[in-house]
Image 1 (cartoon, rainbow, N blue to C red):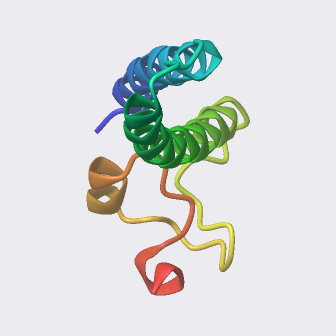
Image 2 (tube, rainbow, N blue to C red):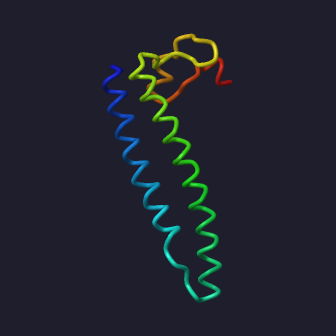
Length: 104
């Protein structure tokens, strides 16, 4: 897979994640219901949203790192052992920064 295709895929995913993160953060800023039962449901929903928010921000950091690696001609090199990361691994996980051996 050419680097430009990977870069475009990463940028698309980056945009999707930023929209998702923004929507979650807007939801957190909304006021909550005065109804106690509704507050309980909202609290449970907030726990789920908080986890999704955390995961989205983590994935966004990884994508940003991969884009930086592409710009610095360091993409596809394992950060632990400096081996080349297999193309199949990068196709499956374009922001992978370790080879399969180091990831295990």
